[in-house]
Structures are given as C-alpha cells and as structure tokens.
Image 1 (tube, helix red, strand yellow):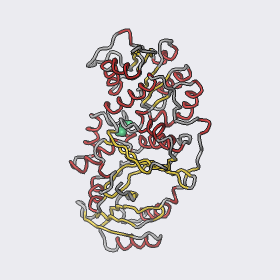
Image 2 (cartoon, protein in one colour):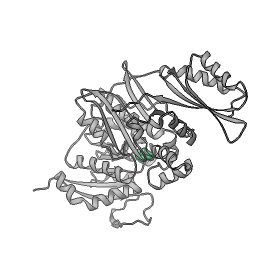
Image 3 (tube, protein in one colour):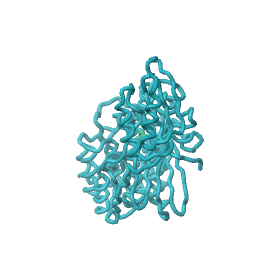
Image 4 (cartoon, protein in one colour):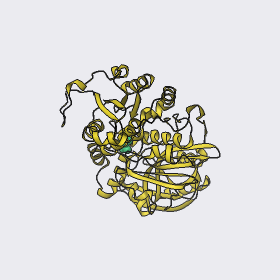
Amino acid sequence: MNLRDNYNIAIVGLGNVGSEVYKHLVKNKRSIEINTNSTFQIKYISAKTIGKKRSFSIPKKMWVKNPLALVKKDDVDIIIELIGGSEGVAKKLVFAALKNNKHVITANKALIFKHGNELAKIAEKNSVNLLFEASVGGGIPIIKSIKESLVGNKLFHIYGILNGTTNFILTEIERTKKSFKEILSTAQKLGYAETNPKLDLNGDDAKSKIAILSALCFKNKIINKSFLTEGIERIDLEDVEYAHQFKYKIKLLGISEIIDNKIKQRVHPCLISKDSDLAKINGANNAIMVEGNPVGKIVYQGLGAGKGPTTSSIISDLNSILKGNVTLPFGFNYSDAKEFKMFDFDNHVCKFYLRLVVKDKPGVLSKITSILSKHKISIQSVLQEPLDNPKNANLVIITHSAREKDMRFTLNKISKEKFMAKKITMIRIRNEKKL
Ligand code: HSE
C-alpha cells in the first residue's frame, strides 16, 4: 500500500491530556498511518514548563517556547490545542492558526463556547478543519455523530449529564457519605475536574457543552449570552438523601430543546425518577439523549472526563484530518446558521423540591403552606425533620407543577420570613422516564 500525504503536527499543552495524546501517537503511529493512508510526524511540542519531570522523554528539537510561533511555520499542518481557557494563549493560538491555514483540534469547550461563532467562520473561509470532539462528553463520539450520522434528522431535543466531576460528586456523596470537599479532591486527582473546579461546580462547564451541542443539533449560532445556569454548590448530602426517600436521584443536567421555534436552553440540577435511565449513570460518566425525526430517541453514554476518553476523541479528530477530510466545524455552512429567540424561562412549568431550614416553632409549617397556597402553589408531599441544632428543622416539600416565575416570587416572599434559618434549597423536578 502506498502511503499518501504527510502531515506535521504540533501539540500545545502537555498536561494530563497532552501527555496521553503524545504517548498514544508515538505508540500507535504505524496503525494510525495504515488506517488513514497518510503519514504524520509530531514536529513540535510547546508547554508551559519545558523542564518538568515527565515519565517519557521528548526530543529536544521538538520543543518550541512560544506556541504562537507555530502558526507561521511551514512545517506545521495541524495544531492540537490542549491549553484550555477561553482567553489568553489558547484563544490567540487558535485564531492565528486558523487564519494561517492550519487545521486545529481542540478539547477546549470554553473557547468554542465563547468564540466558536467567529472561529467557525475563519475555518470555513480558509477551508481548514476546526475539530472539537473532545470538548463535549469526553470519549463519547457525540459531535461527529450529530454532524454526520444524524444528518438526515430534524433534531429537537438534546439533554443529559454533561459534567463528569459533578456526577462523580453526586454519586459518591450518596455512596460513601464523605464530604463534598473530599470527593472533589478525589475527582481532581483522577483528572476529571477543571483546573479551576469552580467551573464544574457552578455549572459553567456544562453550560459551554450544552450550548455547543445545541448549535450542532439545531444549526444555530452558539448561544453564549447568559441563560439559566445553576450548579451543585448548594446541594448537600441531606438533599441527596431526601431525594432518595421520595424515589428520586439528583443529577446536574444540560437541556436544550426547540419549542414553538424558540430555544429553551439551560443547566441546572434536577430531581429525576430513580428508575429512569439517566438516574443510573454513576461516577464520572456522561449520558446524552438526542431526540429527532425520524430517528426517535437515542442515548450516548461513556466516561465524560479524564485523559483516556479525551485522548480517544482527539485521535478520532486527527484521523479525520489525516484521511484528507475537510469538514464544516458545525456540520452546516455558517452563513446559514439560525438565530432562535430564547424561550422565556419564567414560563417553565415543573414540580419543585424545596428544602427549608426553619426555626422549629408552632405555626411555621402552616405559615409556609398558606404563603404557597396564596400563590397557587400546591403541595404534593411534605416532610419535617428536627436538626442537630434542636431549634431548627428541615422542612422538605415536593410541590405539584408550578410556573417558574410564581415559584421564584413565592420563595422570595418566604425567604423574608423571620422563621427562616438558612437560604432555601430549590431543585426542579424533571419528568424523566425509562427509554
Ligand atoms: N471537568 C470536565 C468534567 C472535564 O468533569 O466533565 C471534561 O470536559
């Protein structure tokens, strides 16, 4: 067999993922070349700390101090950006690389979320690849699947567990009863969490991912202005256990759907039936559900974080380039990108889980129920439990369906009452069924 083109690769960023990609490419060079009918060389590597002790050695001649210099080199065809972050060097590098006709592979969801609209335009104009399979769902081949395999469908709903770290925390907190902090530290050691883990916990990571998935599914410009994003910071073991008593699990979900030609896109924790498929996704796994016509509903599942899964997606993107493909970044011509209006989330209707830490005094429960009923929020179940501090009690309420706006208004009223000892925990309940 004659091998065709040769591609020169530069890897920028040699952390957990970058190192794994490098080792994989060295080890599997021949089989990748046979599979793609091309040859490739890792020409250059750039990393913040060149002198760092590593378990593998890199030839001296490969090192480049200033990664931005790579975009001008004639002997670089593909840049694999693994620095991360939506600004700084990663942003400069990817913009300059595409402008200089280099193919780019990146795992950087923050960058695609924030600048994907502009980057896609440049890539299209210059007929180069901007590939980002690793930015969403770790090793799950969701992006290529939407762009290519589901191309014959009209998709209208995509949702799921998009952040491995928070799913790991929510699962482990229930299983081990260890503290939130301790479990987060394990997630960091396992390489699941972002460099700044706040971005996992506050929902920002899932926010970038659902916005990218939405754009791919609904062929719209990435919606990167603000939309409802809540994380798991305010969820305690108590909530996980109360949810269990009511036959629910708590999951942080990213959800996007088209309703009456408007887009309803959000990230927030949900209580879902413990018998549903999503409730059974444990640890750092992600699960993504896609609905459309004529395909119906499909599920993707797999490890959503960590060096192995991320490397798998990067290698998949690289294979595509080595095979000589040039694909549109979002699978459709950017000039055709739609701009949907946002659904007004005030009109969202669902059941709610409420946990109120109240002073344990006569009349408190009746006062709360009367405020709720005054605002037409009807209670489905209620549970009261004394707390270690004997003056306080946990009051857990599951409501019937109510409008978001009414619920917020009512909770604001209740929170001003003197008997409230802490901020209210409110989690939306999602009617999630088995497949
Ligand atoms: N911090 C991310 C997560 C890594 O936990 O899912 C993968 O994007």
